[in-house]
Length: 282
Ligand code: SF4
Ligand code: F3S
Image (cartoon, rainbow, N blue to C red; front, side, top):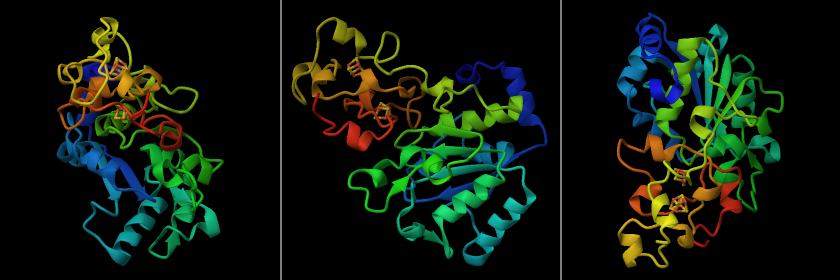
């Protein structure tokens, strides 16, 4: 994590050893809970250390013990106390007054506006929260959008696209805030540079790049070049236009799409469901 954030290890260690945990209010809109699944698989710190040492997860519909009114009370208490980070997972439907996603009698649209208003900062975790994701794909019947679309005046928004967001990157952004009392450096779209400043395709990044330079480009799924680690460009790989650090962070402490022999579908690209389909065509 220190390497990812370009921060000295001792500063991170000191921040995490301090008796301070960052209150987090996690909201879920239209989504598949993939970003939560991703959070559960974060490493260094893993989710157990994360919950005991780094954050105080004051509200999360999927992970909290409380349900029903008690869950709503936890949310309201956290908002009233202030000083929290709002993490939003999933898209926010705006058609028909937001009625297509209602949690505890309140629309996701109302919830996200109410909770982001008092937050230190807000993290749009995953592509759905960033720009609507799959829910916003054409013809987008619920007029789904991301946090910025639902809350036009939202302050201090950190956008972390991905389908899902990489849990290690998400935790790193929170650890950066705890360590420096400041958000990590962001690009013009609000994405942390440490995770989104480079394209996947390139020397020292994609492990298949040398094969591309050697002219080893797979032409069909399962052909000799595909099976022996060749470049996937002709099978539709969107790595050349995709900004993400999956090649470095990996998933589940294991591999990443291109590493497993699938193409990159460009899941961190804005509007990728419409922009990058069909996924398996160059
Ligand atoms: Fe680029 Fe994709 Fe080929 Fe890797 S597999 S070198 S990201 S086109
Ligand atoms: Fe997404 Fe491509 Fe990474 S599909 S997970 S940005 S390799």
